[in-house]
Amino acid sequence: MKWSVALFFAGLFAALGTVFILLSFGTDYWLLAWETCNTDVTNSGETADAENSSTFYHEGFFWRCSFEGRGDEDLILKFWFTNQPHSKVCTHAYLSPFPVSEVTHNATTYESAIIYRGFWSIFMLLGVAAVILAGFIIICAAPFTSPCLYKAGGGLYLTAGFFILLATVLSVIWLEMMDMVNLYVEYQKSHLCSGFQLNTMYGLSFMFAPVGVFFCLLSGLLFLLIGQTLKRHC
Image (cartoon, rainbow, N blue to C red; front, side, top):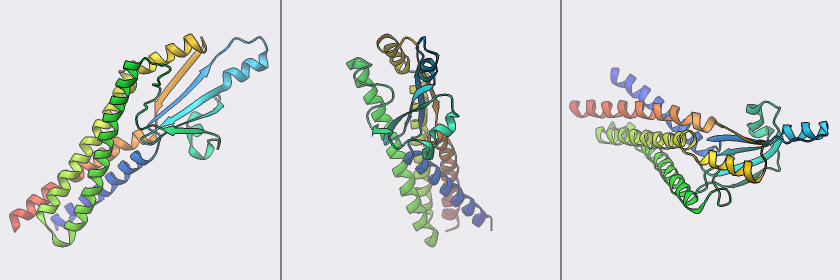
């Protein structure tokens, strides 16, 4: 009876972990950003339009999209996909982390950013591959109550949680500790607009990742325990 209860919760946690990781991987809202340029214009109407007009960005594993809008609206609702204009521009984000580009950063910084993004992408892909493979193995293990398959599935869930955790930590380091964003702001202030402002925040895709990690690690430990228990009773 206890074994059945443990198996139920392990399966439930595994399903939740898989869903949250796939949502985190498949949605392009790891990073949200919006930039404005506050200009000093004598005409009050033009000044208001300039201050309220902003460029919004959202970025994930696959795409980085940008669109224009007014900055005085609710930002969370602004990024909701049904409220975004059809005219938004999306580019591949595999090896181009926001806001680094060849224009705003020197060659060395740009290449370093590509390498950094490459590691982030590899960890993300490994985590997704591990969680999908773990799910198939657990499904195969259930009808045969195989200790080896349960332990293998548990190990893969732990591996998936570890890689997604690494990707999450790299995202935090990129945004909070690296100087790339500040370099971009300084460049825009000196070449585009002295009143340039950039704001960033984490999106839903980022929030899904640690939840998925928690459930994957928990289910992985439970499956390993179940596999070890079955092995002792065989």
